[in-house]
Image 1 (cartoon, rainbow, N blue to C red):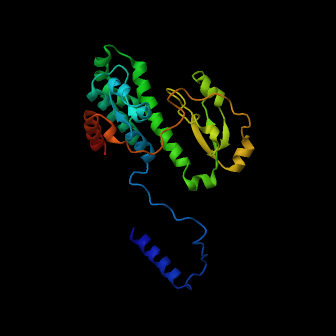
Image 2 (tube, helix red, strand yellow):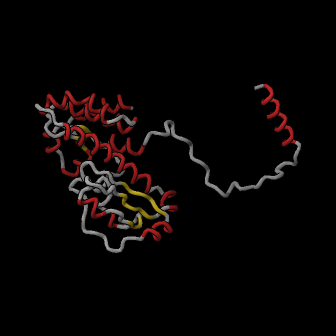
Image 3 (cartoon, helix red, strand yellow):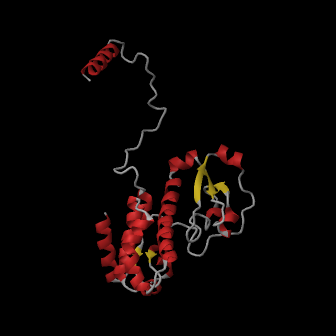
Length: 257
């Protein structure tokens, strides 16, 4: 190790003997400065923020609030106790923020939900997990793809769809939809497009879009009701929610952070 250090030091001295700037090219204007790395490079911050804008609430409270707030709420069908919904919210939040798996989510909330439902409903449990995680990822992805620096380089989007025996008619119809990111036809057609949707948006350069083929005849198909338009960055106006919901939401958010 000592010999290696000596060699490196010697090499450094040899470089110092050269004329200042010798062999170097001034390319300070050739590249944009690299952004500061996030504290956790594996954390999808845009998705986390999108999910945490949703307030946990019971079915009864969900029906009582205005329809414009429904996309900003998280409720669980058949659950009447707010603390159980809040526990589901916290478990999904952990999956979005830390990458925990469905198995871990199931371990945390399964027994509580079975008591609420009065029976085992594995399909519903998986649906809760995958749909809410994909909603958060979808909203986070759109936010990233709409960043000016990204749009300058990749101004087109393509809907990537997994075509197999589980592909829905909605996704099958819209597979490979390729349009400028600014095209209004994307409204109502951004993934997730339905429960358990596996489709995603792929950003393309203009050359890539031309090579793959830009869509000229957009199908009339749109997303299932309640899907297709991930929520924009938003902070919930807690004054519009019942005090008990606000208290639970703030407590869960504090713990999650």
